Image 1 (tube, helix red, strand yellow):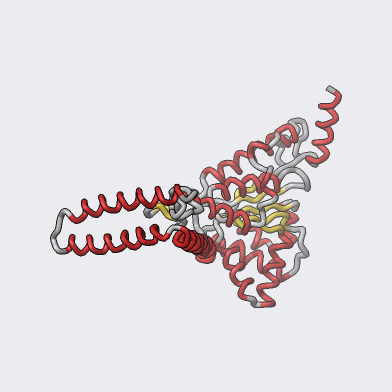
Image 2 (cartoon, rainbow, N blue to C red):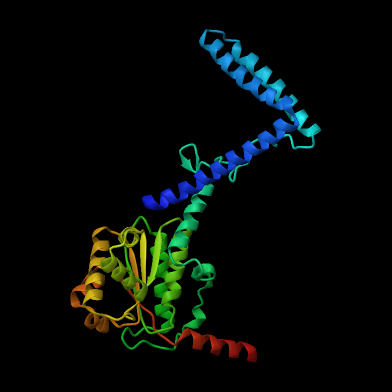
Amino acid sequence: MALSNEQYDTIMREYSRRQADTRLTMADRRQTIYDRIPRIQKIDEETAALSVSSARRLLDGDDAALSRLKEQLARLSKERARLLVSAGFPEDYLDPVYFCPDCRDTGYVGNQKCHCFRQAEIDLLYAQSNLRDILKEENFAAFREDYYSDRVMDPDTGCSSLALARTALRAAQGFVRNFGREYSNLFLYGSTGIGKTFLINCIARELLDSSWSVLYFSSSQLFEQFSRRNFSRAEEGSDLYRHIFECDLLIIDDLGTELVNAFVSSQLFLLVNERLLRKKPTVISTNLTPEHFMSTYSERIFSRISSNYTMLKLYGEDIRLRKKILSRTSKKK
């Protein structure tokens, strides 16, 4: 897990806000109780005074001071609770109300991140990945082998559509399983509508649920961000530019559908090369064949990718059409 400083600060600001809300709530409750039950204010003042005086006695060598303090505090606490209940309040009405009682809204239990902090990481990474809505239903468990035929053969590889899909699925699952331990990249290619984006989303969901930082862009979104950063020099654009280089996983979907020019080619080379140097995994999908990809961008870019990415081909019928065929077959039965 590798949150950026900005992401970590975003989460900690939320904890600071919760702590401030708790202090405000408790101040309001305390004033209400003091107005209704003045004796409780006296009890709180006595409690504070006893703690201070007992600490002084301990420093002076009075070993019995601590046990006497415990007895006195227990007596005052019982009286306080009895007064609250008799006035119609819960006996814990003046106890702090935490969003997460386990860490008391600090985000940590001892030196370990609390479960609520880990969940905040996941929520933030989902929100910043551009994938929150996409991943509600797409996961490995929903992968359907029957969308691929064992009779439709790819002339380039000699493998069936189903065999290629199974190979890509195993590679995607292995990529997730070994993420953070083994450095690798994936390059999925094939025609439109055969499940490349679905597999990408499965990978993203698994890694986001494990609190890895994932950024997803369609190719047009990605190069639009690069263009804004290069021509506006806005600070926000610079932050995003840094996240693109440093996130745990970068996903570029539908590469080749953008308008390709010298700027796009240069930025793609910079991105691919920089993430290779930093050992930051990248997943790319494209409708282009390797030959078409090389002629669209450059041999230099394709060389970087083919040498450092696992190349996965998907082949077959458009899954949307396959779904209609399977649906009609099911209805006839």
